[in-house]
Figure (cartoon, rainbow, N blue to C red):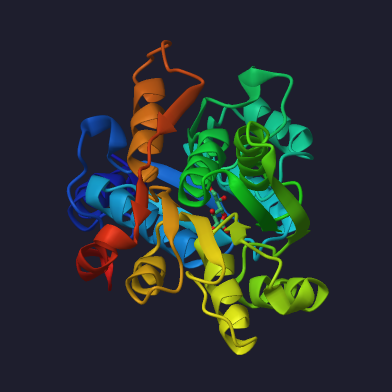
Length: 326
Ligand code: GZL
């Protein structure tokens, strides 16, 4: 037996004993997930909901013994595309993408398909004609979130309200669909209308800035009945602007939003905002389940896995905040 063979006979058990330098992992939930390597292209960290979403996916991966390669795109699609190409070059087993906007994904998803790497879309959607470019999408029904917010506001105002709207990121499914659902419901009420609408980019600072402009344009807010904010961050920013204008947010001007992040429960408990529609950040589990089912050869994976959320108001805000605050 040549020297090199003796070396291999020695090397193999040593590698088995000490591994190949992989990151330390807890015991995997199943044999197929052992040493699974998944790339996750995340939008950014523009809101506390987004950071909760990222932390939830990372925790779920660790619990399952999955090696997660995480990329924060800082809300830039070009960064997401670069990250996906890097994941492909690294030969990951699967890719999860939370797309910042709906368009521009076909080329890079085609590259992933050619490489035989399944892609799971989470949260916002991609505008794709060819649904073979992705395994499944895990998301909330954003249109229904908009309907729930509008139904609450119509009930709170008996269908009579001049509303200012703080839109999310332009081109993002969450903004497009929440707007559609909200408008669908207020169209049923002849005395309800949106008098001003502009993007607050899903951030607290931009939401405050746009609300300041709305207040200046609308007799310092006297003609504004309510704020409809596509996420809680912008709602909290709007409440601050209303306070600085000498008005009482949550009373002089009602505020309804989406996400149900811990800070919005504090704001509602303080009487500064009125209602929020919950968006669960826990989408990692269903995404990893779909990847594992695909690896096991299952072919009945649905193209959409929907997560649900409730409406929360000031009535339960204090107890909910106590449960959710970090
Ligand atoms: C919606 C998600 C939105 C959140 C915002 O699912 O895309 O993006 O509502 C976040 O907080 O910025």
